[in-house]
Amino acid sequence: MANEGARVTPFQAELTNLLKELRREIYSGIRLPRERLVENSLAKTFDVSRMVVRQALMQLETEGMVTIEPYKGAAVAEISLAGIFESYQVVAMLEGFAAMLSAERLENEDLNGLKRNLNEQRALEIENVQDWQKLNHKFHRDINLKCGNQRLIEMIRQNCQFTSYWFIVLSAPGRISTNIEEHEAILAAFEQRDGESARRLTESHIISAGHYLVDFMRKNVPVGMWRDCQETT
Image (cartoon, rainbow, N blue to C red; front, side, top):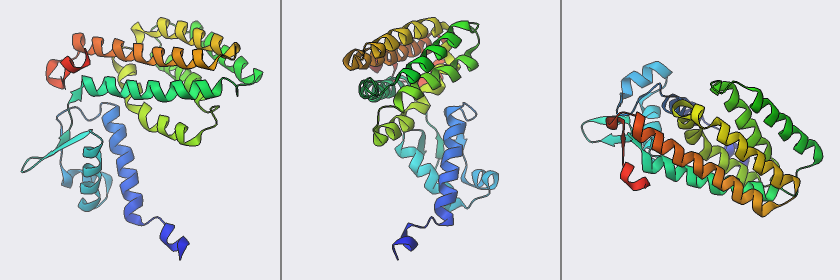
């Protein structure tokens, strides 16, 4: 009986897949802020029932990615600069703690891997955002995975997608050099087995990226696409 209860139903499988696809499209900018999300159209596009679509939209509303208004339906939520910066604060706290835990668990082979990663980052052209982001993601991922706390790792995965997307698309080229310098400082803390410094430097690294991104968006993104900028000061 227990196994029967744990079995994933077709509805749950379709809902999970649809949520994954809609999050990806919103994160990647395929679906822009204020764009309407019509149930019939989504059901046809993803070959699911309207009930699955409705449930997915309700879930995305709780995540702040979609707004649902009576008689108007659902739409992609506007970009909230305050919300983006709050996301960076959460990721900074989570990854900072993971760095502290990892400081005593990183072996020499791991440290050498981080050094190779940094050398590859330095060798890239400054405009090569896509390849740099792959290395950046691996640098952070390799640190996080050594923390030894699976629940913490899962929380980081759940929270980092949104921050990573906006940073890559809007402002990464102007921040890469600073990121590399900050990565070097974090690695130096690991080499000293200084978990507290690794935590502090990681938190500062991510918070600084959040500040940079919000400032960039204020100056470059059309005002109609975002809101709450005054709350991030």
